[in-house]
Amino acid sequence: MGATSSRYIISGIGGSLLVFALTTFFASDENGPSVSGIFNLGNTCFLNSLLQGLSSCKTFFDFLAKVSVRLKSKDPNDVIVRELKAFLRFLKEGKETLRPNALVNSLSQRFPHFGQQHDSHEIFYVIQESISEVNKRPLRSLKIPDLNGMEKEENLKNPFHGLMSTEVTCSVCGHKSFTLESMFDISVTITPSLEESFKILSTEEIIDDFQCQRCSIEASLEILKDKRHFPSEIFWKKVETLRKSLERRISVDDAEIVIFRKQRASLCHKIARFPDILCIHCKWLVQGPLGYIQKSTAQMKFDLNLEIDWLMQKKLCLNPSQNTVKYELRAVIEHLGGSLGGHYLTYRLNSGVWYLCSDVDVREVFEDEVLRAQPYMLFYERVK
Ligand SMILES: [Zn+2]
Image (cartoon, rainbow, N blue to C red; front, top):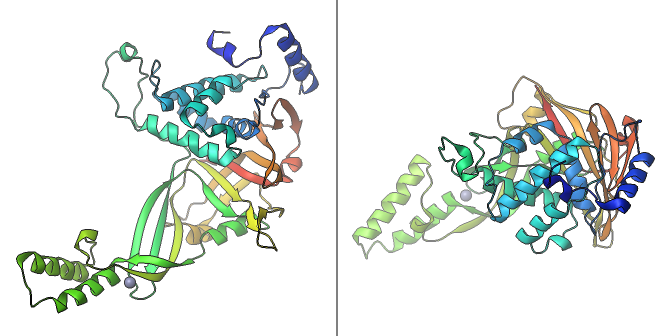
């Protein structure tokens, strides 16, 4: 065991005895559990549960191992990714109960409010942001990578990364605005089943403050028409630009627009590219009968296999395919308690066996227990 690993493993005689007791108590076989528990360092169960979920996804583990990180850098994102890589490597070994001190310290330095964050989904985004920052750094063409402490890798694709399209249609003029955005997860409303939640995901929303470019251009041209008695070169150039954009249905720079019009519009999200790991975030906060925000107690049915067929893709996707997109469940993060506090735990798959991980406690479970969980985050890995 190297020097680095000692940061994560409880040390000293007392610690060893404690680890022995835990591993013996929660052992799945004579060699101890094949999934390590993680010590709670003070309200860190939200992080522990996420780490268990991430480590259950092989494609993420393989991706992270290849991310170039500057080994001696003190840049907070480098430090977070470096510590995450190290921690997940020891978690994968599944031999000891681990202490995530170094990773917690790195997150605390980057995000001063880390200690007050008690949400696995929020910390998921914090970690993904750091990985993105490190991963998007221009690659250096080093013949001897070790000279600058760089690991060499090219064109790495984060398996959580997918694309989401948003189409907004103005209810007044019918103008459509289309954008493509990166996504690392999908947030769904809790319904009796995941399939039903997917259907809601693709339902149109109505918004009242869509800044419609076409309506704005038409209104701007009306205003400029009244000012045509004071012509100047700049004036006519602006009018010409706006007219041409209307004819050709192309966007113009906002600086050209004289007045903006906000209109009622319909908004629709579609998946443009499926990620290799589909992280599903269940929106558990709902408005209670007295108007207060509270945690939903509804049970949502989900399965070990997720198949998105042609019919579902027609609702969900920008470019539906005849091929069914198939995923397999790897982990479920559950939250016990209410909206003001509680405890996070994770059901995760490891070598074909399901485990329930609650900080240091790890025990084998049957599939039906996993499927009875009230999911907060689901991790599905794509099967090709
Ligand atoms: Zn419009």
